[in-house]
Image 1 (tube, rainbow, N blue to C red):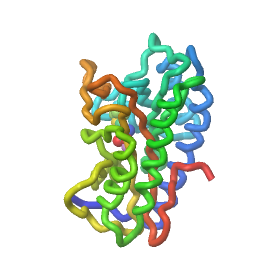
Image 2 (tube, helix red, strand yellow):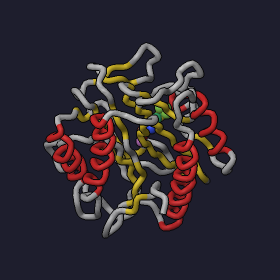
Image 3 (cartoon, rainbow, N blue to C red):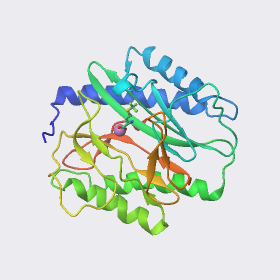
Image 4 (cartoon, rainbow, N blue to C red):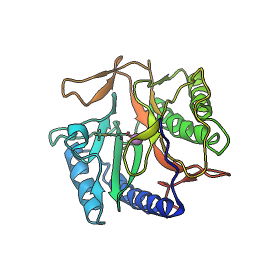
Length: 251
Ligand code: MF3
Ligand code: CO
């Protein structure tokens, strides 16, 4: 395993890549209304990325056919946009999307409520987001990678939710997926030592029910095995000697 340490110049490019992505999300977030199709969101996401001179990094990645993964309700991640799938009031919709700016990748995910959702669904969204923030409290130089995993696990597990194990966070830079892999559940090892200049995508995926997931026949869409709702919250971050910098959060 080799974990890249970004130079100050590379960090500047990562910052810009992530800043542009957060701008794209601000626009995509406004589209989440009952009646819009998951393909409408993808097409607009792709347009927003290209209009900023960037490239959608998910499109054609291992054959993935779209720029934005749109995953509704019990779909965990990698939902394939479809013009016939219209979102409706009460749904929760996860968007996962990234881009390439001057060779540098950014990656980010959010789960949005469609109109009014149940208090139970809202709690799942809140806990999934907070899981990210609990995790990155440990994300500083000198700590170990799996300190992040343990912090997420310790926060989420008391809610009775299932933490997805089949999919993990990752290093990111000149490739979308770099070393290391970052599980969202406790490991019985410490993992690598974190160093300033590492850029990581931390992305808890949390199910209201059990942690088990399965793949649909399209070979992409991951759904919860028990049909329960699932949420996703991801940012690209920079490890520093102090607090981590959350590169995909709008200032
Ligand atoms: N968003 C995923 C991740 O966070 C990658 C999706 S790849 C795609 O690592 F091909 F499904 F788009
Ligand atoms: Co990711």
